[in-house]
Amino acid sequence: MTNSEQSPILTFNDKKYDINSLPDKAKDLIRATQVAETQVKMHEDNLKLISIARQTITSQLKNELENVTPLE
Image (tube, rainbow, N blue to C red):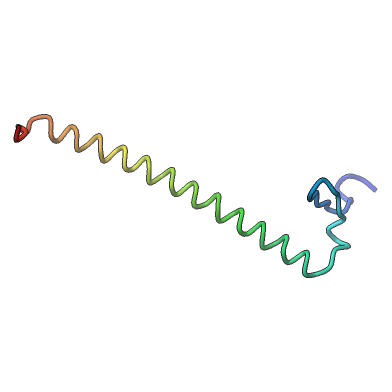
């Protein structure tokens, strides 16, 4: 068998498993874990974008307030 024909392998708790031979419930849990990981990455990216937006807004506010006299 070539590398492209080999069954996918799951490494979990330092053990290797042939994914194709796992019970359907285990395969479903693997897919659920992949979906969760994708969602985590998406939300991390969103947080990065929000952080950049906040920095940009803060910078714009600083520029806007440069010519305004503070109360004290």
